Amino acid sequence: MNVAYVRQVKPEEADGLVKKHYDMGLARAGKIFNILRIQSLTPEALDATMVFYTNVMHGKGPLRRWVRELLATVVSKINGCVY
Image (cartoon, rainbow, N blue to C red; front, top):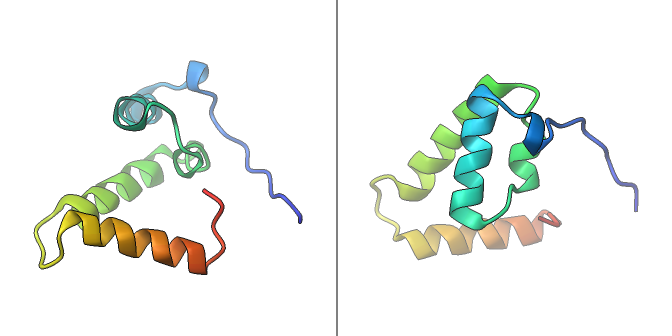
């Protein structure tokens, strides 16, 4: 399997929006997931992605949180995501 490499901001080098989201990731999950790291070179995109994610997963809607998480997991599995 080919593995892609995307340059990333290292946690110890992060500042501004990147540091904010890295710190939030650490607080939330105890680690910084690759989905955050691969967007670190474009902090505005990282911020927009996290705002979108938060609204989809935590916002008002007809689906309960656990159903949203389950759907995300199933779609990731179908798409062959390894994260």
